[in-house]
Image (cartoon, rainbow, N blue to C red; front, top):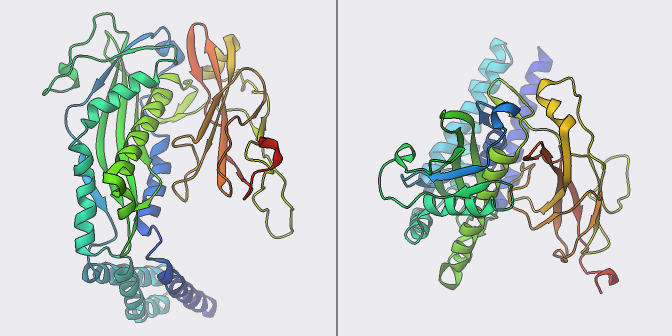
Length: 430
């Protein structure tokens, strides 16, 4: 029992110590909402309902992209608006943490200790909550950002246009129906020879940020559904969550708001490409319940050199801004799995690599590529355009192939590889 009580006290000390260590950084940190967003994006990134078999997907060529007509909900998501609200939320969270810690000990004394420590936890939570709360006047200015963007862009139609554009080199023929001002996707006139509908819907658009002068990240949440025609059978439905690199409010509004609109367009383009990838090109490898399983891509080798220590493995640093990336030949998975049998008829088209920077602490897959390359069967590639110096980059590789006459993609390799670029370019670029 003594050990249980000591562990509870240690946990209390660690939580308070963490609050204190984070307080000086809250004015520049992204805050709790960003971390919540990152966790949610991991859950949503691979979510797909009603997966289709290879046979059900076969033969689709002409696809009509159908945008939803209802504007998205706009948000500014933060821990709290105003120091008073932040103190209240922080105190409540701290008190609940103390009580929850006491209950997990499954011991009456531990519960009493948790109750006794509640004022201390609540006080620490109140201080922390006040520090990461956004002042009301600044929150109002940030809340106006999504409305400013949507005032000049019909977001649903624009996304559908970019989806059609992203699909031009996909092997599919993507078209848009005529614009209309009301109704819903099911009322949209569709070409009679369409093999499928790709319905798109931007459900939420807004910003995240915490602190007096927060770093604010733009985000878009959307859905896409592929429907086989004329049977109207749903072949797959996915939820997407994309986030931009965070910037300060004054940076978003600099030069008449050009950074705001540029980032918005880039985010929509990244989202459109991912919709094409997930709903049209990903190979239907299998599923568990309602969750689609991606066909795993080839494994990759880390560029650069690092000194291995007994305590940690540092991120390797490349010696050039145009590193050579190397990966292994794709290996066909176990052919005994029903969903993988089509791979026996696969014809390889080539590999694709993506080099990207992480915009979320837990982001493990590309959400927009700083550098993208489509190649042939070669298993290495030297970056053609110099990367930025002194930056941390991640990279992934996947394979493009055909089964019969249908184009497909594997997923990206399971874990992205990471490297740092040098502070200054080497002679290799000259």
